[in-house]
Length: 568
Image (cartoon, rainbow, N blue to C red; front, side):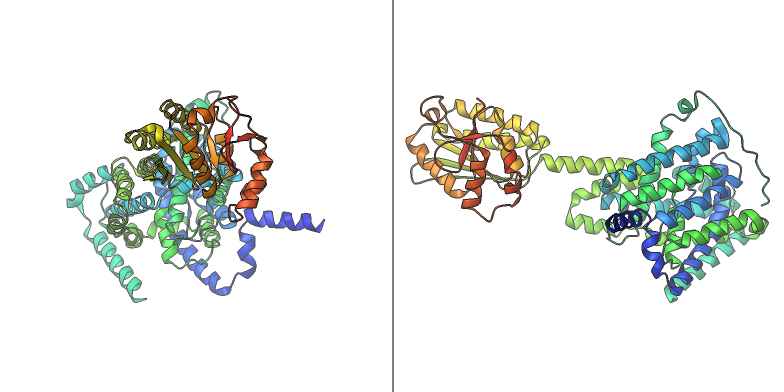
């Protein structure tokens, strides 16, 4: 009974991280969280009001969206710096659906997004987020910082124009720069100077009646947004959170649950979908936040604004708010990573610049998606071009031995590459009948079906030229895959077995060795292979002894330790 309670307590704390750090919460952490939360709250209120209009929603819906995500992330989140709430990306993606169904569709999107994200988190699919590589993250962070800083120039200079996207904003900025308000510019620039020196020296809202909408075609109206919006929300939030982890591992599955709870619970207070806010996360970090509890203070500040002090925010100069954001994000531009990537691996610059430039041209969400796709493409290309060492030697008996050593496991993208390497090395010899190809598979952890079929076809071709192939493998999954081939495949465990096989090959042709019924061969089981393995080489992987029982049966040829499948 006690064991069950301990297990439940451990699992509960695993998914509710606030229980791990709250008992040790200190007064010093309270100070940092309160200051950061107050600063973020001061920023999110006017931003939320503006973003709601961008989402085709009444202004108060921006504040509805701003507090519940902060509360939920404080309880379930793991990154102290990440701020969950309304963003321009989520507002723009929600706008097209809110135009059809109004606030009800926006809240429904938040509900469905939360359900989707919770399912991913509960099933521990956070590993999918591990495919956001460092170059993609660096390109996304740099582009987001530049785009966010550019967007603030409008407020700093007191310009008034409508724009969509980075390029359109730059175009409208150049057209309207002559209309700069000198008073706003003076206040904005002086605020930036003050904030930089500080860094280096140390509206009334009318209630809206909720309504229930029953429509048979609601999911048809939402379309791909049901999947795209929660996925983009996850990508952005986790990409932003990773930029603050400083090399530490981010628990992506927990972040999925935290973000999912923010969207799920937010839908009950008329929130539209939320994600991580880059600009407010930077402000949160630079304000000295200590724990995720800072979200409680910023969320409470938003509720206070909704209830009491909303009219006072009309007196906050927009140029000052823009200056705060501008001076915070300019230090998140990571262009210094470019020389480092150039020195370490030039190929990594491709996903970096793909993410960086497409974020300006197509938007942050598309830049991130295409950057991840490019990084995965490079990963598959590298897997297809794995290193395979080849050496040819002549032994004392005049037999040509071709040693082939893959540097890593071979999967289906690289199976043809292995076949090409072996064929090139074999058929460059003057007499293939005197050749033996030894594939050293110490690095082969497993062999998939496509690769096994490729090996089978390769053996067929080599046997027609009276040459032979010998596999030296130790991993049980690789042994099992090779023993399951219809063609007879010679397998050996250690170097002595290989030498014994080669010595017998001098006096026995491959045709005689593989002919059925030429000689009585002793049948052995996988247990015999296990005994041989344990008695001859104790330094091999201990996994073999625990899993060898699952191997197919084989027959012994040319000395102890060598086997071929009997499925012919």
